[in-house]
Structures are given as C-alpha cells and as structure tokens.
Length: 490
RNA sequence: GGUACCUUGGCCGAGUGGCUAGGCACCGGUCUGCAAAACCGGUUACGGCGGUUCGAGUCCGCCAGGUACCUCCA
Image (cartoon, rainbow, N blue to C red; front, side):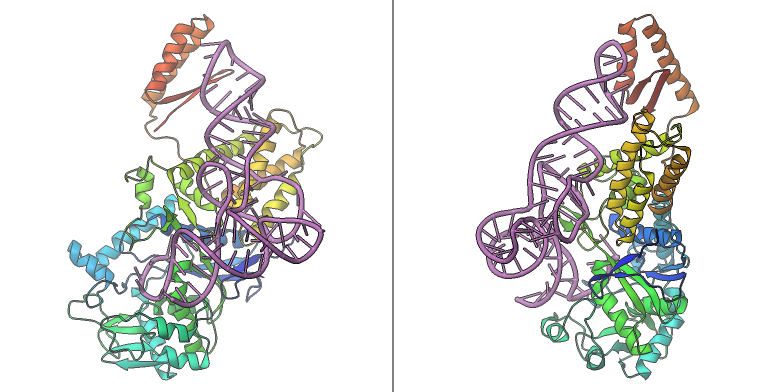
C-alpha cells in the first residue's frame, strides 16, 4: 500500500512526488487571516484545505510542524488617501485599541475554526510578536543591497533583484510586462520603481500601530512577516507553503524574492494554493462586499442564506470540491451537501449494526485502496467522498443481508470510516439538536405512545391526527418496526 | 491592456485518450394501515466549429462566454 503522495506545486505547475527535506518530518506554513473582521466563507477554504493536508500527513506517519500566522499589524488600505493601516482604521471607527480589535477578531476566528473542526496549528505566530525578526530581515536585505531606505521607509528593489533572480517565476509574470502594466498609484514617490514593495513603512502621525526601528517609528511591510516567521519556525528551507490563490501575486512572489535575496536560495519546496469560493460566479471577498460570514451561515442570519447551515455542512460542502477548483456557493448546493453528509454519517453509525458472517461478498480492501489513492493524488477529497458513498451502498446492503462480510472485513470497514471520515476529512457527528430538553422529549414521546396505542386499535384517524399535527409543529416523525423516532426540524 | 485559468446532465461537482465518478433533485420499486423516513434501482452530459487519432469530455487550433491576478484580499 506504499504509494507516493503527489502534490500539485504551483511553482512547477505540475503534480510532484512529495519528498520531505528530512525523512519522516514535514514543515508547513500557511497564510492565516488578517484579523480585522469576522471570518467569512472564503476564510474557511484554506483553513479546511490545509487542515486536511495536516491531518493526512500525520496519518501517513509524518511528524508535522504546521505554522499558520495571524496578521495583526495591518496592511495598507487601497482606497485610503495616504495608505492607512487597516487595523488602525477599524480601531478608530470603533473607538477601540488596535490590539483590542485584533483580540476580538482572533477570538472570533478561533471559535469559527473550532466549530469547523479545524485542528489548531502547531504554532500560530502573530506578526506583531515578530517585529524584531522582521526588522532583522529588512536589515539583511539592506546589507545585501536588495533594499533601499527613503525617508524612514525601506523598499525592496525589485529591478535589482530581477537582474540576478527570476522575479515572477511563481505567478508566471514577466518583469518587462509588469513594468509596462503596473498601475500608477498615488503617494509612491518614495519608491524607485512602482514594482518595489515596502519592507518597512514609516508611520504617519495618525497611525497608531507603530514600533521603533533603525529607520523610523513605523510598521513592517505586508510581505515580510511570513518569510520572517516561516524561517524562524521551519528553517531556511521547508517543505510546504500554502495559501489562497489570490496571494500568489504579489504576496508569495515577494516572499520568494525576500528568501532568495536574504538567504541566497528559496525557502519553499512545494507551493500549494487553494482556489476561491464564488458567489454568483464572482469571488467572495471583503473588498467586493459580497461575503457571508461563517457566523451568518451557522445562524442563517443573512439575506442570501435560506436557512442555518451547520459547520459540518460547510466543511463537507468544501471537501466535495477539489481545493484547486473554484466552488460556487448556493443554497441548493449547500442543502445537497447537508443531505449527503447526513446519509454518510447515518451509514457510519449503521456499521455498528452489521453482523459478521463466515464469508465475505464485498471487497473492503479495494475500497480502502481507492480512498488512499485519491488522497495521494493531490488530496482529491471529492473522490475520497465518492468512494465513501460507494461504501455507503455496501454498508446498507450488508445491513439488509444482501451482502455478507466476515469479522476481519468488518473490522477493516469500521477502520476505513473512522480513518477517512473522522481522522482525515475531519468530519464529526453534529451535536444533538438544541431545544430537545427532557420535558419536551417526554411530551412528544407521550403523544407518540398514544399514537401507537391508536394504531394497535386500528384507530387510523387518531393516529394520523397526532402525526399530522406534530409535523405541522415542525417535527419529523419516523415509524419504526418496534416504535418510533422523531426529531425537531429547525 | 497584460498574464493565467475555466465552460460537464435540472443543480453542485470529479474525471485528462477507450471502462458507471459521487451527492442533491427527479422517476420507478421495496417497506408501511396510509404516509414520512430509510433502502434498492433507473434516466438526462461533456460551450461551438474544425483538426490529430483506430478511438476525444479528455490532445491541438480557432470562436463564443465567464473568472482570477496585475491594488489589501483566503
């Protein structure tokens, strides 16, 4: 069953066999959120994508160090007059301390991630906690001659860098095209070229997030934190760097440039990028104002959301698409995911009821093999799920006595679902529905027991009346051979 | 304008040269007093035109439509 794990590397635009730098160990860095607002559906995609990568690498035996940062020093706002710090802007709006804003949204992000059953990364460094490392990086870049200071700010000299290295190799851009096509922006006179990016920015008087540095009181540039923290916790070379496709350029390109310029070589072996979630075919994003927060999905409190969707529905919805494809949001698709997940989880429960026999008519080993093959093919979770659904049919047939399985096969079957559904895909059974307190439970049970008595007497009128009125109140009634089951639909 | 990517059945979404993806919906059946639920089974497809090939959803070209990045963004 030893198979190579293939990972699509954005750098080579090909699937490559994963070869760790140190056998048995894997280092992974993923760009985390900028904490200036509640997490939306888009944020859940990289979190879940790389959560599955993290889980799978561990499952196949790697000791993984997974670093996912929190960006809390703010980035420049595009439409602000003088390039205002995002977090500072929000803080002034809300009349809060910047770090209070950071804490609020960090807490919110963590809560949402827990709801989505996203494992905590091994290290979750904050940009504000690594100002010294970023200053060191900037100093090094100045020493090597790939950066210049102007009026208290420090910029990366892209054209100089491009003389010795390939700037644009990750995003497939050519420096000549970039020079020609870069838009003219206001307030960039400090830069030698519009391609250059800030490594350190001098703070304007109204800018309240600031730290001392050799050049000015200011704050680090947008692209320095990831490389500074990645190097610190994973080393000058590490295995995997992940993030959203929208970060490819300029963010990740700038990271490569800083690595090469400061260290003389690249840091990352495998670049992985998840695609976007779209809404009506358009990217869901903060700047487009068409995003729906995770809390709004969980509560149903958004005009575009027809009903509340549980965190596991969201997770399953995302895993049903391959991470490198765009995924379009719609109520119909989410409701399909909700029902599909329910069917899958019910089948998993049903495995317990299967009675093994002396022989087997089903091929459990093949199912397992297909699941691993799908995961090893660039984490193809939709195929894993399709295979698991094939297994659902197998499980149901076993329960119906239409197929047979021996004890060994049954043990393997249980293991497959434990491993793939829960350990790797990270799904979990949802909590029992709220509002089902003991009093309610007893009352509904009482009514349904009355209904059974009516049924015994063949008093169909009464039996139907109880059932229909409960349904009208929002209950779902399921008759069973030896009684009944019910649940309260939200 | 530059660069890259995408277009699969009612909906979502895999698949990259020959073999049923899968889910939801729909239809039929089993079960049931009747239902519901559950289960089983089944139908509908590869944007258009041309080319390569014994054979293309899959490779190549052109056309149409769409998206992303080029500016903070997951």
